[in-house]
Length: 152
Image (tube, rainbow, N blue to C red):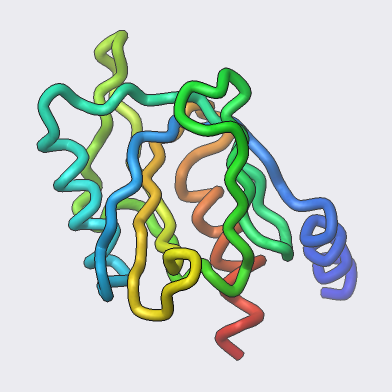
């Protein structure tokens, strides 16, 4: 319907933002797609000790994905332009991140080209933080807003 289209367009302009846990970034060379997410998740979960998860502000808009680490633990702000992001999904094996309070969260991520490189990819991994902002909703939004228009 027309009203749905305009809300999607409005959302696209403003973007959608939420807080998530940033887990890790893993170089996946030329891998993208579900294989890259799967490899990065396996690498991250196998690390000992596990990486310290950091709360980041995750914003998706028609311009790209912007991550802001308000505590500046890992970085301050990173922006991934829309043309560098090639894929986003939940971990294909549905593996979980174990939080410090022993609860578990779904792992999801996106694959972006390394700046200045055509063939090298980096997979950025996150875990859901807010039950109101499930990983599936974030991934669907990335796919609809950023990756949808490019695929037509």
